[in-house]
Image (tube, one colour):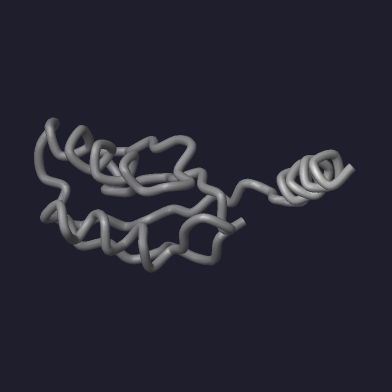
Length: 92
């Protein structure tokens, strides 16, 4: 009985978690390989689902689980990879 309750509690928690989308400004993105490096760094952050960069705009859009990570952690990951970033607007 305890196991069934635990499983239901875990599933209910996952159902309530909604993915967040954030756009990060990455002004130092200067070549075609930069988005690859940024994607690799962000993909290592727990809770990140997808990463898509727009080289022309020097922005990266990240879909993530805000129960597992934060905008600060995402910005830290890009900075640690050599690409400081700042959020553009608020997470959705």
